[in-house]
Image (cartoon, rainbow, N blue to C red; front, side, top):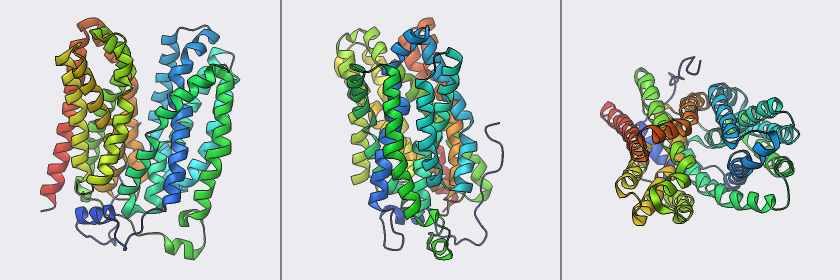
Length: 430
């Protein structure tokens, strides 16, 4: 099952500095712990934009033509896509274990090839059953190259500065939807969805693979010499002692899963939901505010958020999301309320991407990071995959306002979970 195996424990021979100080020294980038090279972060940023753009964001634009081509309804195509996401989530712990054993950067290089091959397989699938299998394979490939793998690579390269590196990376990757929604639309005016997937396969092979291979070749973790092994940085010591790790893991995983449900439900239904509430043509305009708000929150955190610990960032993220949904529920068709909703949701989502990588490192340390984040991602992705369908059912049976109230409540529970983690780590280290 998803949560088999034990959580990694702190090595008995490791130094035991105060965990908060240890992580904060990484964020201030002292000379004792060098950050990941900027060229590596920029390279990963490019591959994340292409990865999310080709494997995730383009699907919503191409889905109607896929449905028509395969003789399905659009709802059926999205149902298959949700099922593929579910399978990817279930397999996330396995992928995380591979990262720890083989190296996340190496896995990303392999993942570029697998992503390209699965995009080609999707493009060449003319039978619904083969297309379904290809789409599932595509989401498994996504687990090899998207955020969890990129975060694990940054932890490998420079664990003590990984928190800041993750912030920089998410700032760059935040432009994936901004770039690939219009790019896919532009290509779709001249090419069919199969041809577009072949173009996207080429991007993964011609751009992502060389960048990932270059990171492997130029990093100490990618070389085998004794000197290279000696050059590897010491591990980060987590804030949680070994006897509280399981408590922290389940609480953090549950909070991330509730937040994932909240965000997934809102993103899939945002424009039609705003239209139903009476915003009409303004619904699309309001929806476009989400992406820039994500990037804005990451930029603000990069400049001003260095003194906030990952648990407090997680609390802020959940607060922004749940309060944004609450504002929309209360404001109805009032345009300023809808704008506040989109901005707050974007702010929360932007911070959430950061804490998905930084909070596990802060709590559990860098050893076994891939396994821990893989298990966390499994619970989050499984619940996220059910969110669009569950929100639709709630809206039809009880109304949009009731569905929003339930979703906001789940976001509030996530905030309480993160707050409990913060209080638990502070009181446990006094």
